[in-house]
Image (cartoon, rainbow, N blue to C red):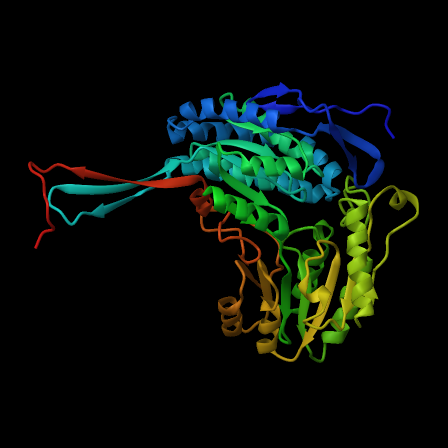
Length: 498
């Protein structure tokens, strides 16, 4: 263990502030359990109240700042982030174990998100309507809501906070961010860089803490919006609390995503898609390909063999190495959980094709490494076909035709991302229409997201509550509508026109 470690403090409204709790948690590199990345305060109610107090004062100024002026902060934040891209990517990799190439892509996502929502500063449109009365006009505008509590996950510790912070700020709100205790530094740097870009004092805070502190954020009466990226169980609890308090609530929860491979699929394209979808980020994406629903055909068995051969060749190791393709999983306890899914699937009758073990020896002994794993002969009602693993484990489910494939794909409690590989465009569009998911891919893996205006990241069923992130629809979470009636008649009109 390192003799010394960085002692982080909260950033309350732009001021680095020591927590009143005097308690800390530690964060280690998942690729090297001997590397302590820092100690972080377990924030408490007093810390939160201080952040809320600063946010309330800032909101009264920021809400009335013209949106194009607010946009200038996001434009500058994009430039600050761009200048620090390599440094931030390395921090992200050390926190999460994500390969450095993927980490660079995530930081680019932050840059793109800032630029997109900065552009929205001149496009926060309302509506105009025709009145049923003479000499009367109606306009509807969007306005900010207040303080937004943002609770984020560890697997995208830079991109996901930016998806929440950017639309909240451009809309005129102020934010309090609680990053995951398993990846706390990236979120801290994100808020720090917003202040470097000129964000006025008080408009953003980042407070460290565990799940208990997240509950304090949700329950604080002055925090009007809650946005969570996390588990279904936590999401349900938060939704219940927000319902009782009549708070706006945005939930992005779990997934059990599938690729359907039909007999006419392009096998080369399919191989690349399944490999990347299942094992990129060590399977630790909410959009990771967790199921391969494959139509029985003359090549289906040989394809699984090719897939296993390719999976065995993936380079696994410390993700700061440019050649690494699969890094560690986030914690040793999470690795144990992943392995439990593997063991139970085999006991239920699944056939282990490859993987299924902790990696050991050399640098592997230092971290939480798990082999890319493929298990075939999985039936649609088995645990591995239904429950989220959040790791590099792929369930192979054989089906007889496209009708059965679509039925199996929908046969889970989640509805985030589904994909189909086929050359039949009519069948592809039929599947896209019938899929019970918020995201659909045709001839592409289940992972990936863009931040453009037409995109909407989010899911159906237990994946969320219908809110969206990443595109213009995210503004719906952070704005409220106001309808303004303008009467320019000379006398009161008591009745509708005949």
